Length: 418
Image (cartoon, rainbow, N blue to C red; front, side, top):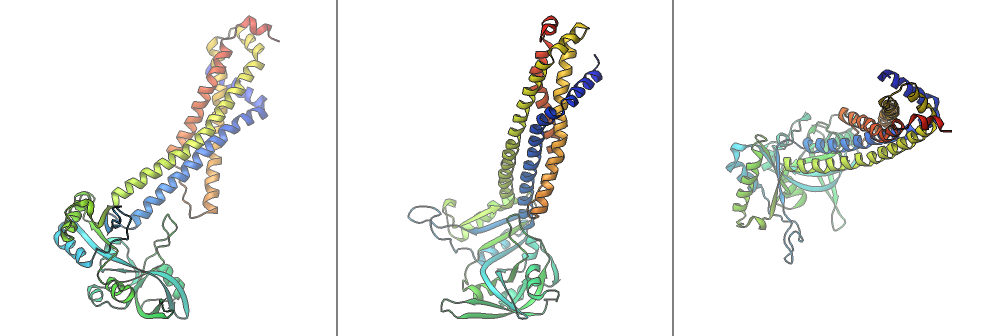
């Protein structure tokens, strides 16, 4: 019997038992759809994390204060306030050849913003003049503050696009005045007048739901002297390396410079920590890859259950068609003809189920994307190929035993079967 004839016979048998074949394929359809949808969610989570980190800038090295030791327990105390603007300038002077740009930041908390009789609440951060270069964040309009405004602690601000929309709507914020208000411990309100000199381009939300366009940037000295009173410290120093290759040894050099400045001999006692963006990205990518594999494995279990259903139905089919097998063998059908017929029938069931499962999986991801636009789902060609390949493999593996059992039937015994 030719392969094409075997395929036709297998397909005819499937069409004769439409309901049974449909229910058999259902397990494979659900399994393939589950694999595609879950892996798409995992891929989306991984891409979302990667985009969020890269959106902060590329080739970044971040220095932050370290938790202090308390009662011999490292990291149990309060956060150190050891980083200063002088640390930033020392790093820039000593390692300038490997540094493209460097900036320092100080968080000033959340403030009530008032402009044109509109109220809004937003976070305020003090930064230095190279913030734009380090963070790769251009302006939509206006200008960024310069070195003289940083040194003089000028009351000027650059705001995010979402903040601008909330306060001014369609009007141009540049040149406008806004008030920063915050209640004091005595119950009084601090009111400070700032002039808006620029608006950042929109970058959207991060993968963690944080809207980075809703913020106010002021000169770091303004945040220190006027907003927080913490005149001798910054919350972070962010360094943009000249190249990706320079990041590893630049991280070590930054650590060396700060250990010397802070008069610390043992690196284990450092009151700061240096984080390499590539290392953080690699660690998070590893976590999301594990998460994706876990989700795919859950879908794979559904495929396995579908494969067991295929074997069960094929065994029933062999049992029901025992006389048919005997007649075929009596008229000259060889063992391999019977084997290929039942094996092709099993592969056709799983292959058809796999194709339908692709459609169902795609529909699920589309539904998730429409109902939750913030959730990123990504279907890749390798995922689809693997899902279909696994479904066909399951058809071969779980259909092989029933096919071999049919092929081994003795023609006389099969003809005598009632």
